[in-house]
Length: 529
Ligand SMILES: [Fe+2]
Image 1 (cartoon, rainbow, N blue to C red):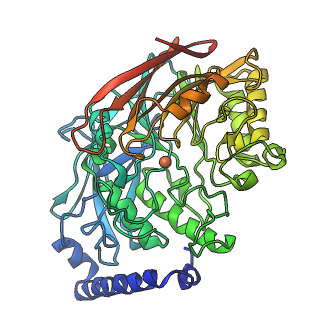
Image 2 (image 1 turned 180 degrees about the vertical axis):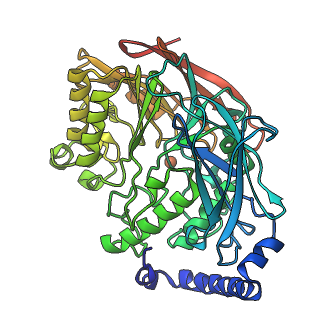
Image 3 (image 1 turned 180 degrees about the horizontal axis):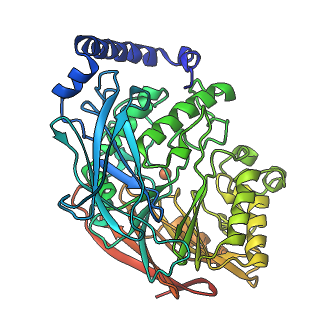
């Protein structure tokens, strides 16, 4: 457990005032704990409100196990509203949607240390099978969630459908994409980051954040809880298992390892920022259906990992925030500079890079999916002579990208496809051995999903982007509306559908299919259909 008292001492007085108020709440909780013995408190199940306000979730499907998740939070925006005692929660998993044929059940302890969140690794399940699950405590029963296991890694799988999503700024739009996604024919959801945003309240936004910029563990918990109260997001979690990875806003905009964004927050000292990172990572772990090996230790959290879906697909899930060197040349969009080309600079860190190449080398999967945060392909954002590149993407870490492109070109892992978020727009691109040579080999494909809500309604095209597309012939598609991306895989074909929303600034946006691309087995690069 991180001691963030010294961190709090550095925070603004507004934070201190807010913590005083939270302290009163904690005292009330303590009084409740003293008034009832633990068992009595449970038997009476006297929560101030329905405790399953954040819904349920599942994730990390393996062939015989999956993680199911919930959190008791009768007052979700005020620290959860639970007394500071351990609370046993019952869970059950069934093979039918009405929870009649129970295949596994048990009890798990919700503890104040993890904000009364619980995760159960349900073991002993059948592979490649749908299940339903729910939790109960006292008289209160959670919604029923649906999940599924993966096929065994060495088994044939004829198809896999999943959604790719990212960037869900609560203030900037409704989660209408999730309403449609929850009804789609999917096996899985892959979220590549910006699950929450750390910023303060925007009075003009379509719906408001619950506090100024979040800094403490309590702040991060309340922010995750705010996002999770959204009914469409809950429906999407309840419908499918998720594989999640973070981007920057789960902690702070454009942070790099121990280096904070340059701003007026009191976290500019890396030692102080690491304390902020620790509480942000803890709150993220508490709210995501991750495996226990991801439980953070201080400011460190194991998020890069691999998941197999039969012989059809392997997901290499990356973390390009925790181990990267600082953005070169002062971040932003810049011309190439020596720091930008420094072979010592890294976006993944050495250990993760080695792990990725080892996994790609030994993969038996038809499709090797790199699920990660920021754009890999080079994008020259200056029209005409010269070039400028975004220093926060792989474009800022040219040596890292060159090594990856060289690896794909030389080692030829089966069908590499990169999945990306971050930029609040849809892109479909070829990955090139040398991005500066249009004649060079295509070594893979990259599909970038737009945001769920970040950036508001958006627009189909952007004059600024249209102007520089001719500089980047490997880019085949751009769209700036909100929505999600559906990927449908078979042993012979990968199909990507870009689903876009008419608007997200009202709750009644409609969805349509804007474009589709395929990648054929054994033929790197995308083709429009
Ligand atoms: Fe974002």
